[in-house]
Length: 416
Ligand code: GKR
Ligand code: MG
Image 1 (spheres, protein in one colour):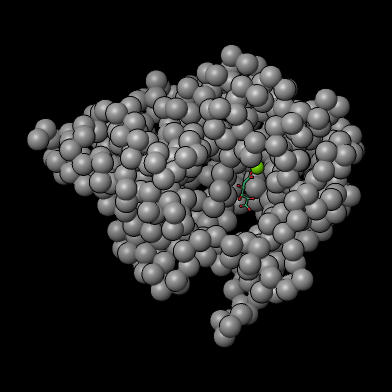
Image 2 (cartoon, protein in one colour):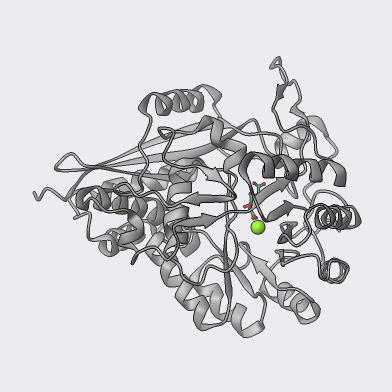
């Protein structure tokens, strides 16, 4: 067996702390789930990866682990095809299969980089920027996770943000701590006029700095059109105001600003109808479900061909994902907007050895070490895995958690 063949894929589910961030589905629970991959080669080289968590994704990664053993780590196209074929009978959605192939591809690229002594950005064609800009990801939030079932309340050092003044204060803290120069608000929480007021307050507090609003399809087409009109001149783009490609296309007809998505164009087969219908002008890429870093680079080329701008989506994540996002963003020439990241909300519990990644002046410098350029902290991995096991938590449930405090809360999309 050659030294670059895959000997084993070690899969470790973990749980880490998350503040009470509000969204159109409810509120984040005290623990968020991820899965850490260690791809071990015959020569002992280990490539690492990070995937969103949950029981279904864990099961699919275990299925992938069976088929990749013995394959060459440089054969990433064949590795992805083998995983895809193994999942196809039980996972019909290409988007869903993409989560698994992506996580394994990132670990392969990390291992390749370690073998070659080159950063992953080099394996993607080389970086076109030394640092990647990120936006402050603002959330309406409670001051703390309230006490529950004998568990004490869990506070944080961000405080409450439930109105325009609270959001501006959170933005100031984000800027003070990380130097962000663009801001995204997670909306869909309060009636649209309140969120319009928050965006106007941000525009006043941070003149000339790019602003975005993302209500995660909480609005009807009519409401979306209203908000777009009200925020003309305030937003650089409006993200997923309403559900689906036809709905977004309706809003786009009259929208004074570009529309963006990480919800209605999430698989290759969505690109054609979205372009034909003129549904979006900005695509938020996410290597975690577009098939990996190389596929994301290809996606960028498709967007270039159709005149779509590029930004980047995020979900609650840790440092391996941030490193992967940074490498791919560095290698995409037509990245037109700062990327999203949840990192400030979750970085205190990171699973990597500190030092390689820093959010400073609103940017992350592209790591220059081999592979992703970050190292796994094995003690921390063990701690976070223990937390996962002890918590019994196996899936994300923002709506169910909200109902523990507001039993009358109903998931309703669109709500307004
Ligand atoms: O963390 O609550 C959240 C976000 O709403 C996340 O789940 C979304 O996937 O950030 C994401 C987005 O841009 O839609
Ligand atoms: Mg979004």
